[in-house]
Image 1 (cartoon, rainbow, N blue to C red):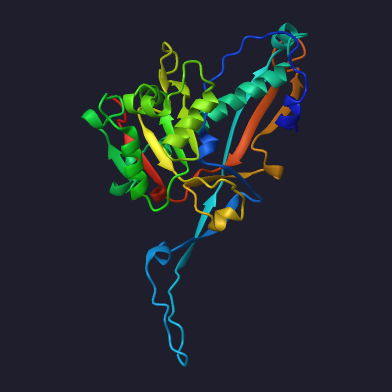
Image 2: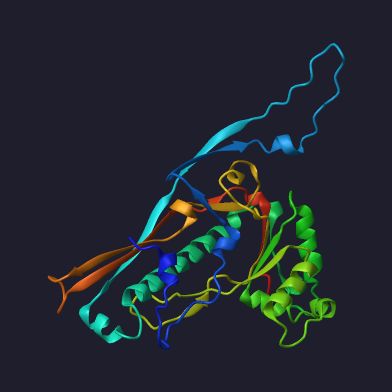
Length: 318
């Protein structure tokens, strides 16, 4: 078994190779990885009323303190196994000699494909409006849309924050929404970032402006065409804006009590997500020395712990 991180530490490429890569993927910024020892996880789920209902704390010197009923239920989940594999034939080994290690190259491509699947799964959980209470979602229209010249994105965002039970620490927008926010007259006047500004600085200014710790632009693309049809690329994250609270320092203990919109428990020693397996060339398959098999797999689950720690805007721009 080969550890993918050790593979990356090797000087694999000695010459420039052409490789396409997706735009920045953000799944782990919404569902932070948490290593767990087994594929079966259990955790307590507390009645949220205990946090928001006023209790009568006064009692007499010769009486008992009033009791508070704290209800807890046990939630359990089983992590799912996921994986992809690929073959390496004798021609590929011959053609890549002196250029790259074909095993490492295919490991990376398989991992990229699995990351894309993860991104699509996260977007599905995040952007399903029916999963949110009516107080935690809004569909913008007309002059309220951030693309409208008279809109006030900050006022809209802060009003949503005020309606949440915990102020969000992250704001996620699709690329199309970000492009309109950064050209909105009110945002431009307040932020005043300059052309050619370093992206990280631009995002930090926008985070401060919208009163969150991190402003994230979701840019991932995927091919929506059916197998065998002409490629048709679309944004994974559409014209939406999401606010949410995500645990800043997740760990197995925090899953028991620290609030967070979601977690991604992973079953892996030392917290590594990917496991990579290779099989020696099978001389009965293919020409020459035969075909070699490479597989990347992972065991994880996406847990939405509290939809009320998120707020979803759909149709944020026209």
